[in-house]
Amino acid sequence: MQYKNIIVATQDYVTTITLNRPPTNSVNLGIREELDHAITEIEKSRETRAVIITGAGEKGFCAGMDVSDLANIAKGPNGNDVFNRIERLSKPVIAAINGYALGGGCELALVCHFRLIADTPRTIMGLPEVNLGITPGWGGIQRLPRVIGKSKALDMILFSKRLQPQEALAIGLVDRVVPAADLMKEAMAMAVALSKRPPLAVRAVLEGMSTGLEKGLMEGLKVDREWSTKLGASKDAVEGMTAFFEKREPVFKGE
Image (tube, rainbow, N blue to C red; front, side, top):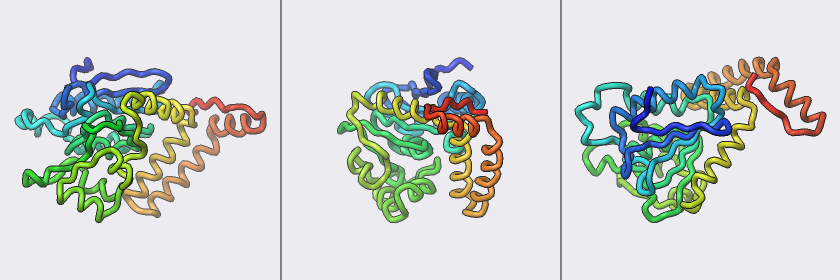
């Protein structure tokens, strides 16, 4: 697929997806279709071990659903399905929030495994849909309390609060606040570090944790046990042990 609404680039086992509809980078049918395709390619690619999602320009990470594209809302992949696929990727995903992340943009950040945010006055996060008499429709009601707790999530959603970077950090909505000029450098450094971790073990952690959170402790433990057996017989496990005894850095291949 030739991408028109997103930019996809891979370097050093890190794939960066840039929403490319500045200044708002709002989600239309094109972004949903292209994100869905990109996720499929990333999932099966051996050249990708970590992912960064960000927005083009300096104003917005993502302003959520493009209201001018409502005629196409029932066409193509559903926003919930696309976001679910990002959350369940077998490779860690970092949101590099470079501008406002409102509505569906905040929900997109929530499905990423890590969230870094630029320290600027224009960088705000929120789920303001209740102001319009509607509710967050791409998972925010379910995911936000899992990240920041029920009462804080209710306070944020019901009062349509918009949080500055330090406020988002204080309640655990983001993991790190960084200077705007350093955002992509910090995100890339984190992604490269993650790409050097053993891919199979990383996948096992992501899958086991997601299963446990979605289906309960016992189901999660079942996945963990299955992965433990697989990992014990993997080449990466042999490499990890060998490197430990040889006092060198391991080189993992995802095998």
